[in-house]
Length: 146
Image (cartoon, rainbow, N blue to C red; front, side, top):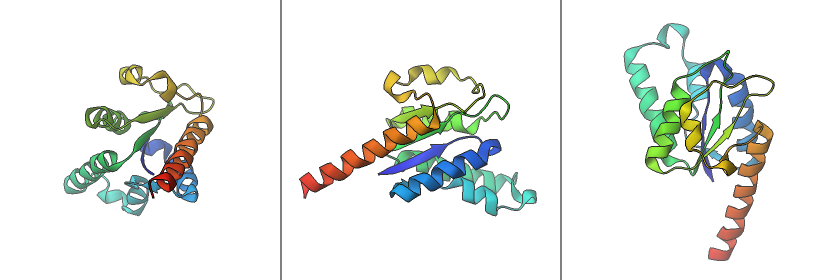
């Protein structure tokens, strides 16, 4: 299974933690924007050519994913990018799972209303459990198809 993790760069530690947990399960991350950000010197973060390349890579990551996991940013750490990635997932027919930040009010975005109720999780742990279940089912179906 392949996923794209959408979240706020201001909440990068949370995104990295869940990326690492997914990798530990054998889930492929289609675009590791967190590592790209960490590897970029501060003076290059807003370089136009770098931004174009990163944005294109992120959208390809969404397209290549079986699921997009939106780690909704806290209202205190807002993002524009993760909401664009959610919209791209909708446009490309990639299912998304949503989880709010723990103990904080999430940044509001009208487009979360388009997610099916089963994709709206109460916590990151719940979203991770759903992805883990999907991976188990996918593994079982791979065995049947062989």
